[in-house]
Length: 299
Image (cartoon, rainbow, N blue to C red; front, side, top):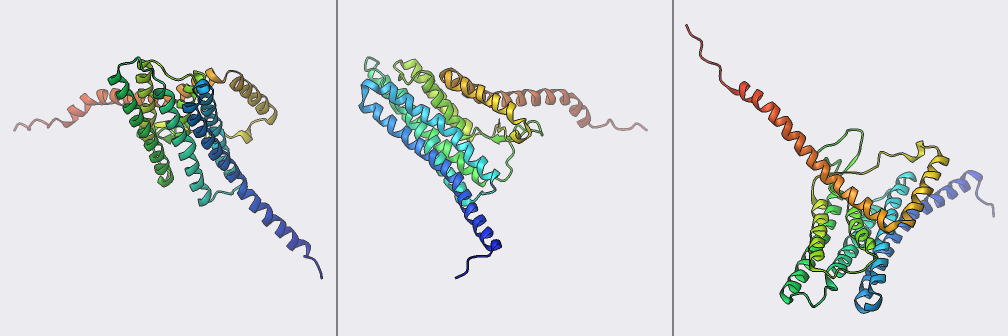
């Protein structure tokens, strides 16, 4: 019995390698789902294990924050290895719905409203619980709507276009919105909200995240950054320093990054509106003069 010729053996090996390459992005997507599921379980544990509630909530927030780079890696690896597929796209959307939709909305609800003390007015406490559940649900709806719009959009353009040499998301991406909530919880080391006025601020924050996801405002995507053009040793050094700072001062650094990115989209929209209003005011008198009818000619 003769074996395969060298050309057939090489083709078979390449086919097996390519099948393995298709599994690589899905591995990171599965890791994303696992982190979202782990975050949900830790949030639920905080309800029953009151003595260690802060620890469980902090771990749940950290799991969401770790899922963000996992989500970025699966898409980047799929593009680098040319293994993009419709299955991978749909799996990635479902993973994002769990890790950045269900997990952060549940975390926001439990951390921000479940542990409010009973010393607060019973009527106010009831209103905060009901409003918190409703706003967190709106965050979830906004997140999955953002994912659905992203999947069906072909080259979407924001209402406030930016620089042509940069690429933008239309609306705040769901990982960034989830990161804002998780980074806030991690900033507080998971210690839940116990003041009614902080709960109101949290309501506004969660509602803002949901609104920004369904908006058509621009948010910088960073996709034009090409790491292959950089010097590998310099890039490795910079990444090592950044990684150390993020891990060592994660509470402050991640919260600051989340807040800056959130308000970058708000500032971009406000700046565009102001510049547009200035242009309209400058063009107003000229447009009015041009629109005036010419006086009749005298004979």
